Length: 289
Image 1 (cartoon, rainbow, N blue to C red):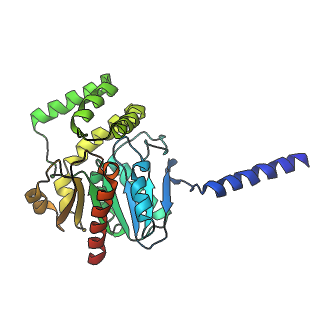
Image 2: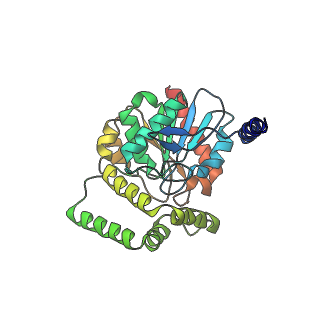
Image 3: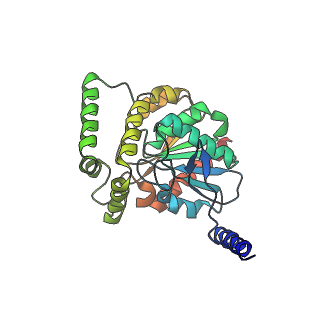
C-alpha cells in the first residue's frame, strides 16, 4: 500500500510541476529532442530560428511583442541550447527535416519562417524542399548577396580557417567574431552574452555546422531561383545588400527592411526598431496572402 501511495505522489507532483511551468513536450525526430517555446493562438505562426551557437532566447523581445497577434514558436536547433546532441551528422539537410518535424508535430498553420544569420540558408532550403509548409520567409541579418562557388584561393583560405578552428576554437572565433559581428556601439553585455554562448557550445558540432554552412552558401543562387515565396530581409544597415544580384536570382522578388547601425544581432540590440520593421514585413506578407 505504501509503495502504491509513493508512486501516486510521484505522478501527482510531476503532473503539478508540468502544469505550473507549462513546459511543452519537446518535438522529437529520429530520437533527437528539439526544444521549443510557444505562445499565442492565432492562425498565422511566426517560427523563429536562431543563428550559429546561440538559442531561442534571443527572440524573447519578439515573443513578447508578437504573441498577442500571432502564434509564436521559437526553437533550439539540435546541437544548441536545450535541444539534443545525439546525432552524428550536422548539416542543413538534417536541420531542414527538423523544421518540417516542428511544423508537422505542432500542427502549425500559415507558417512564416524567420531565420537569423546561418538560418537564412536554412529557410531557403526549407522553402525549396517544402513550399507547401511555408507561407513566407524572412532572413534576419543575412543573405546580403547570393553565394557563389569558391575560387581555388578561397578554398585554401577556408581550409586554413577550419584548421585554425580545430587547433584553437575559442581563440579563432573570438578573433573573427569580435572583428566582424559587433559594432563599437554594441552593448558590452550583448557581446559577452553572444561570446559566452559560443565558448560554451560543443566545438565539434559548431565546427561541423559551419562547414555545412559553407557548402550550402554556395548553392544560394539555385535556392533563390527555386523559391515560391518572396524573400524578405530584415538586416542591419551596416552591411549593404547587393540589390541587383538579389533581384536577378530571387524568382519571386525580394524586399529589405533595415535596423540602423547595429551589429549582427539587431533583434536584441534594437528590439523596438526591429519589431516595427518586422511588423511592416508581416503586413506585406499578409496582404499578399
